[in-house]
Length: 342
Image (cartoon, rainbow, N blue to C red; front, side, top):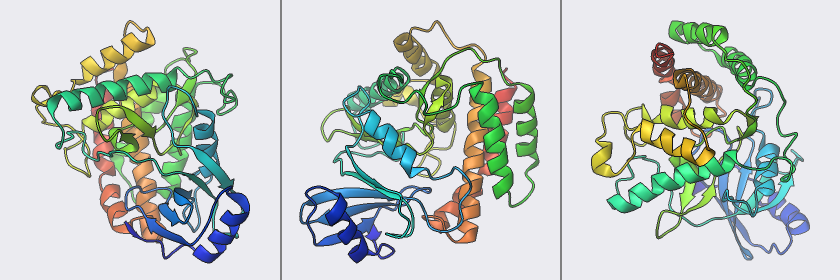
């Protein structure tokens, strides 16, 4: 963590005293180094510890960094089978700290930024992956009407909408021509499947490093980073997770390429998909390669935006942002490879 020098703590403390029940100063802040989108801070105060998550400063792409949506969906999921932090208060007044933000509980747990999970035993690792599978199915099983989320996303063909959206976002943050990305966009545009009527809550960035697990055992205690959540098609979340595993191992690639999964107790892609289908009552997922190609494209577009923010000077971690942005051609190539399986 780094000191929260880019927060006006005096103004923030005064606002919290008026708007966060039970809050007491003095207030200190440390910025979490993880994450490339919405800067996140640990707040320490006389009344306890909290987490503040804000929009980044500077010019932003339209509809990006929607902390209000993050706050809404996590508040709606309280008490469900999807573990989330307790939401406290949302501030949409930019004059307080320079951008909108919300305050939530600090959830204590283990966070793994490497899907190989090197510091646990085989049985725990196997349990963590089964828990990831369970929570993903729980997200997709949320009763939207009962949770007040029926209007959390538009109706219609999710993939048509998402391809159009992320193509626009990619073009808006483009810093040079990537021919493989152009080819992937063209292929996706021509191969959008018909709408099959599936309409669920989707997380939008579901992976192990966006989860907190219990200090002892594999139970998930909170799913984090809901910025990209919406109502959409459940296979997008599943494919995004499988897509990430195709990347190189390590804390930046965060993949499982070349890893002996059996030796580590990590399920192969097919076994994980089959377990998910069993939980969702599905017999299988035809043409999974389309969803995988879409996942590669979408992440490439996201990372292109990270690169653009780094170049513009308003990324959460500019140095890391530039390194991640350099991998966009690899994501495009991965998407074209997945497309060949359809």
